Image: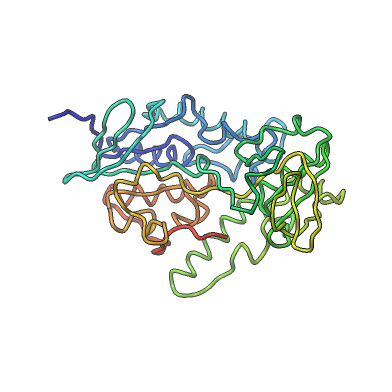
Length: 365
């Protein structure tokens, strides 16, 4: 019989959600390990474009136990600030992160879950999956998408405005990434913003902390059969400084979504066409859950049913940090922290009062 390395809890992923889980596991005295596919700390933040800004000031963008230090430049932290913070956080709490380790599959065993990796196999009584979404960029299908002669990129491919100097660029998407990238690109390129519905900026006073509080109140309301206020009732885009600047200079005007892609650009239903050098798809991500395929957790709609962060059909597995379906704003630093606390408490046998509800997973929006 092949010997496996063993831990009471195996955490898959060493980004913000994995480290938040690690903090509470360490505090609970658990036997655990964190397996991270990256060769350095920082999670997905290491791959974001340099000018990306978090939605909240540093004091509201922190993991448990240690507040993110104020940024040297003031205001909203950058992706580099987040990488530095996560690197220091991991060292500060001496979290047992092993990297680079790629998890290939998670399988059931009678007394736990088997985690198969490219460096060996781990056995965990419980597994917390925190692989996030960055590794599964989503681009919707549009007629002609494979025919265009110009460049097509996703948010995950964007590294800055320099390659687009003087070009005609179409930016697709009505969320925060699209707005921030548009704000930057519109200073060096001819940009056209297209969205499925008119984009709505949140009031200037609303940031990530306020959004998290709102998401939490809505989750409480849903748990008792009430509706509550949705974030989407207020708007879609956080008005970080660069976005406010673009708004003030009139660069945030959006066109309706085009109908098809041509050899030279895009075309709308009314026959209007526009040429472009590049299309930048800021159309979101999907949960990176391929490693969980052997567990056959997804329902007919392709989603994993959960109660809080626990998979309903495999209670030894928790999914942490994938979005609101695994906890209010759990894909953010502050949201991951609070969700991780409840997850670890449940695993360690001391469940907290849950504010989550059963869900079939993320909903397309």
